[in-house]
Image: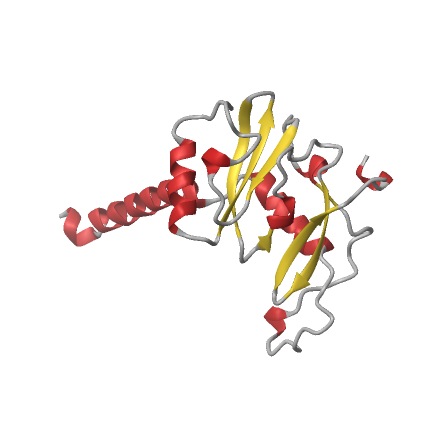
Length: 184
């Protein structure tokens, strides 16, 4: 009787949607990383030599930002005191500033394997003391963070960047002192 009414089909569809959502959630970046990527897109300087768009979906509105500075301290909703970037092709074990830090679970092994398998991966690590409080991969096709890979990393007051579009992707560079008051 239930086969005729479609109850099993509906339950099967609902179960597959629930399982799919539970699996998909693992691939959604944390809010702080989405904020960072959105701010890069908002404040990035466009490539003056870019070809004209062929489709309206390729057009990004410009001029909406009140300043060009990406202030990481304002984008991360939790407390952190140092940011370390592991560039594409970098080695987590040899990255200065990450020796002796306490990671949650098996994150170092996971990141090490993923970064070794694909050069499109870069890693952003946020520390509070010697504990990792935030970490996530940032893909090179979203933006090039190689200029942010410094042995000492950045503290919240110095994690201020600008972005320009070069060859179709964002390239970030750190802002040198004096730091703009809009990031205070």
